[in-house]
Length: 375
View 1 (cartoon, rainbow, N blue to C red):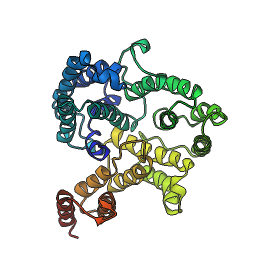
View 2 (cartoon, rainbow, N blue to C red):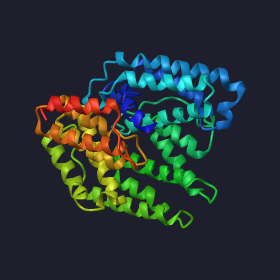
View 3 (cartoon, one colour):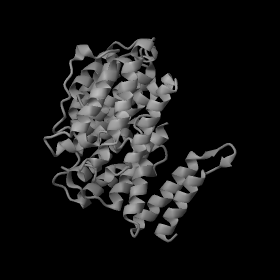
């Protein structure tokens, strides 16, 4: 499911990203939010989502989501290179979600719905929170655990409120709670401080109490220690202002931050490195979105960062960045490196115990890119 969503969800709620540059949020985004708000009390509970008495509400909300997806291509805020993915893919996803529910595959549909929300977050966290859209709702109207509420708040860019809920969940964490939710909560907090607030010191202060919580698993406390070390490094070498920096300054900073980690064996997988990849990719995304300037080097940098930070947390957009690099800049030598990385990615994805077995459509895509690049 994730591999499909990675090609589609970069479009979802994209207009709200561009609300950073405009005081008016398109009406379609309020319509999307309205449907998710209707579904929030049901989507985190299998029992509630499959109850017969909730069937009509769920069917109607899912049908409206699918319908509203058709309006996305008409937004004028979809031109920035880093978000140019097909509206058709998004429409197909939401159509499949609705069809799955109608066909009785309700738990699958519920998981697709939750995954869609996570996809929204993958986009929302690509720009800082200078002017956050304020979707209005009351905390006591949200259902579920502190973690469930925090996830909804995080998705809808209520970051300050989500931090409070994540912190409450982590503080109360016990043997019966899910470690995956604990890890997600801590990573969400890190992302907010690095990408949204650009506040390394605030991130250190928020994470330090949890590092000393002996009730948390040892490996989790080890991750927190590494993240704090990364935040301390970020304090010493903050990223340039993307609204004032040149493309060259952005490229130099990002390369300096990540290339040593990619060259050293195992360094890329260390918790400390996660902070560097987050900061570098956040800078590049913010530069592209606020300045609408893009180079093949910047797209390749995004792909290299995303390949590291998407592991088990964000939806991967790596292949989309590589595609964009190839199609937009076929004359650039960097496009050939993007193609090599894309080809390797496809080969790895479709290689198993019986060897490589690339689907026909993937082979056709690779062949088309080779022709485009004269390879």
